[in-house]
Structure formats: C-alpha cells, structure tokens
Length: 396
Image (cartoon, rainbow, N blue to C red; front, side, top):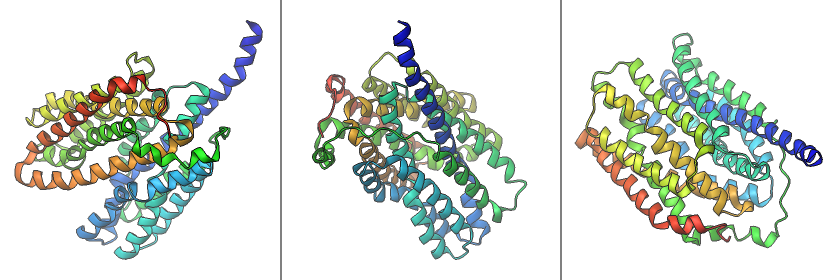
C-alpha cells in the first residue's frame, strides 16, 4: 500500500499543478471578456465611432466563431501543437487589442479587430479541448476548473463599473489590453501534455465527426439551448430598464445569474446522473426560465428566475463537456470543441437577428420563442439520451 501511495503521489501533484494553472488561465481569459463587454463599446463611442460602425465592429467575434475558429482548432490538433497555439494566440490577442487602441478610423478598427477576433474567439474552445485532454490524463473534474472563469467575469465586470468613473472613456481600451497581457503571461504556465499515440491516418478522419448522429445530436442540442439565451443577452437590460429598474439592480440581476453558474460548476463533481441527463435538465430549466421571464415578473421573482441561469447555461455547458469527454475520441477533442462552438455561434447569431425582429413587435414576449428553442433542444437530447449513455466513443 505504501509503495502504491508513493507511485500515485507524483501524478496527484502533477494533476493539482495542472488544475491550478488551467483554473488561473480560465480566470484570465474570461476576465478579458469581462472587461471587453462593458469597456469596448464605450471606447468606440469615445473615439468618435457612430452607432452603425459600433454595431458592425462588435458583430465581428460571433462571425469568427463559425468561420475561422473550426479551421484553427483542427489545424492545431492535427499538428499536435494545441498548447503552443493557445500561447501564441493569447499574445497575438494582446497585440491586436493594443493595435486597435492606437486607431481612430472605423474601417481601420474593423479590419484590425476582425484579425484580432480570429485569434481571440478560438481561445475558449481550444482551452476547453486542452483541458479535456488533461482531465482524462489526471482524472479531474471540469466544473471546479471552469468556475474560476465565471468568478473572474463577475469581478472584472464589477471592477469595470468602478473604473469607468475614474478613467476617461478614450483610455478604457488599455484596461482590456492589460488584462489580455496578463492572460498571455499566464498561458506560458500551462502544462505540456504528452502526445497520445495516434496513427496519422486517424487524424485525417476527424471530419467524420460531422457524419456521426450522436455528435450531431450533441451539437444541435447545445446550439438550441445556448442559442435560446440570445434574447436575454441582447434585450434583458433594456427590458429591465423599461420596467423602471435602476443600474445597480440590473447589475445585481446579471451577477446573480453568474453566481448560480459558479455554484453549479462547483457542485458538478457530485452529480450522479449521466451527462445526457444533465443536459436534459439544463434544457428543461431553460424552457421554464424563458416562459416565466415572458410574463414580465416583478423584481423579486425575477431574482429567483435569474438563479436558473445555473440550469439553462451551467447545467447545459457542464453536461455538454461531459458528453464530449466520454463520447469523442481523445485525439479530436479540440476539433470537436471547434465544431461545437461554430454551431452555437451560427445559431446564436441568427437568433439574435430574429430576436431583434420579434422584440420590435412583441417586446418581452420574445422569450416565448426562446422557450420553444430550449424545448426543441430538450427533445433532441431526450431522443438520443439512451444511445449517448451507452456510447463509449464516437468513431472518428
């Protein structure tokens, strides 16, 4: 027993080190997003960019999710340079934001920001792919690592609200650059992972994932349920402001949702049901959340509904990652993440456009359409759940 314990101790120490470094990297990368959301549009406005160009520029990242992202993840994994690509993209992202901060013409900003988005948006899915490989190696759980990203989002978003009163709007872009630079430095500490013994021929068949019904079921479910958040992300603050809520209350409601997400990530190792069942619970929770939200409930009820973000986003995300980890071959995990992110990006972008049209005519009743999307995702995962629970690996 003593010899066995000594044998496992180095692996346990390596696993803890891997977990600490990945957790910090999640915190830093999501922290970039937490500064970008409130700061970047304000900086664009302060630079003299009009509303049309602001809308055009800020629409770039979602587009890159379903164009260049799958190509980058596939190339990095094919050449087995996932960690190196993450590090390179983190530094290029910092450089890109810095160059954007030096520009003043809308077309120039659009071009440079588009190039920056090409290396920024793949960071999340590639980090998930890298993490899944490490989880399989060290037998760790995803949720406790990912929760640091959600916690960092709350801290940076609230910090932005405080800094915005102290810093001139035309300098806000440098806060984004500073956090991106910190994230790039953190990426250097990511653990190298051993290359799995994979036949070169098997690497060329990764696109076969897109012909596997079970993988398609995972993608479609995640795209529908996560895409059903489009109206919430686009119009929640507007609806709440129209209802007479002040800025602090609105910020608190957003924070409640992320806090619920953190709790779900922290508790996820204790889940005893299958990942497919976790996704089904998340999808059903999303449908119920949007149905209640469509009733324009009072702020007390709304606070409780916001806690359901732990179901609609948290459970869906945790379950989807779990399905990928147990159903997708190790050597194509990053590409699977790329395909998944692309499908969510396509559906979310289209749903945001559709939500705008519906909201203009029906207001908060747009959430009925979101509930229908979530229910459709629930139907897909329930129909495939038995096969997913039996599947050990989707052949690629």
